[in-house]
Length: 150
Image 1 (cartoon, rainbow, N blue to C red):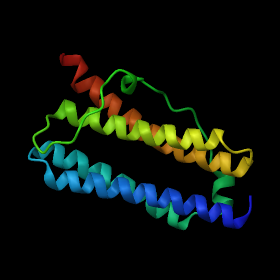
Image 2: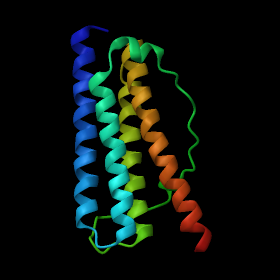
Image 3: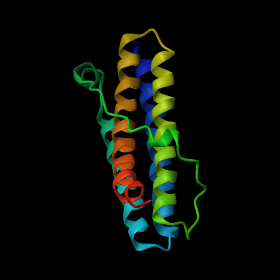
Image 4: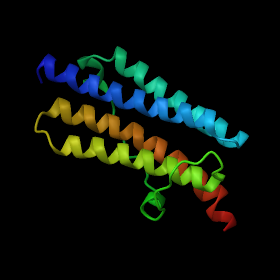
């Protein structure tokens, strides 16, 4: 992979993480529910940490990154997309966040599948893995605190 291509991918990923940070930060300020304020703030901070990691990453870091299989509870396959509302309840907020992370996961997986360059493929797969971790955390929360009581 050429250095120019690597930098373009990193710039794209940084922009996506910044967008996610801004979205979650805004929602943490708009929601009227204290627990949701905390959840959205935590998601914003995770996106911020990802952006900071990407800002420091170099090609060597990518080649040493260990890919692992992240379990998929597939709850995102069965929940409907939610619109944000300052008055949304906890279950709706979780569905909203699950779908956001699912979208990012699918985007990076699609980008990995769309290249023949092994380094780019690994970079996109690593980014997808991080989104899969977010999705798993949210789906676990949904399973334990929404589905168990439905």
